[in-house]
Image 1 (cartoon, rainbow, N blue to C red):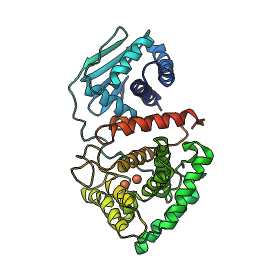
Image 2 (cartoon, protein in one colour):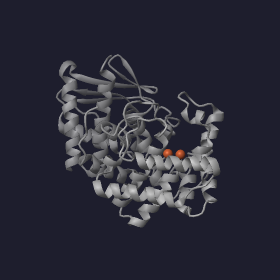
Image 3 (cartoon, rainbow, N blue to C red):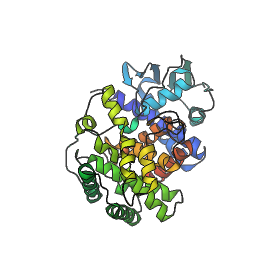
Image 4 (spheres, rainbow, N blue to C red):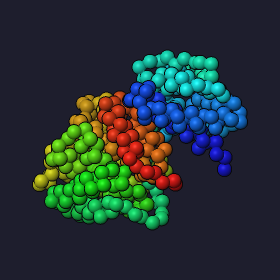
Length: 385
Ligand SMILES: [Fe+2]
Ligand SMILES: [Fe+2]
């Protein structure tokens, strides 16, 4: 099989990572410089044979060499969106491109406010009509894993089994045991404190049946780790983790066949999915010992930061904890179908959050989350796939 699509995806990831780090950390920062260094290395390799790297935008695809590459999600989507936002339909990078040219290009690419992207000697750009991208990847959280098979070796399997038990109970008699939740969250927190690295606690998804529950534990771990990094006190982080564990309880009311459906959903099925926040919140409201926060997060975790999009349809901005958990939720959903062991996948998932920053997600929280995950990448040794 041709390697071009994955090679160009890597270039898109590195371009976007460099752009994001220019904005988050500034030009001279070590993390920015490392990203640029990696990008320059890849470009040098790409430019060895042909001397030019040309990427054109065509509808929802990028054209690279003779390949049409799907750009409806991931880093290709990120680049396509950044380019089309600035009216660019064609990008050409030539052999001899300097670090200075790349840094100026990345700085301009990351600046969402400015429509200006200037060409330079070795970076040429062409204009294009701005495409309507508003409908794209509106619900990245819905990306789900299909059976991946293989051995499972998850650090949080026990917690996931407890959440699974909790969910079964909800399905049978609509009851949540607040005491069980406390134990799960404490266990996740102590693992985090013990290992000091969020990635080591996040589970790889191999088992379809446990997927939802591992996802839930991952979202709780990510939310608490991020919350603590933001300066939350232990108790508040604990409450956040509990709310995260319960955020998708409403999915227990959706038929399994709909949750597991591999193909596109019918409008009826989509309506069912959209009911899960309300169903979950209604159920949790009736439970003893479940916090107001958990009810609120269950209701709001698919609402958009801008108060317009998402579901259920409302016209207010969700609370900050819901916005935070929505970010952890999407990050883990994007990863669920990939692996926590590949650095590129971390960067891709962060890039998707960046693309929707300001509309679906709170831009300050996305920036902070990117810094938080970047710091964790630094301390984590990724094993090759
Ligand atoms: Fe959900
Ligand atoms: Fe979720």
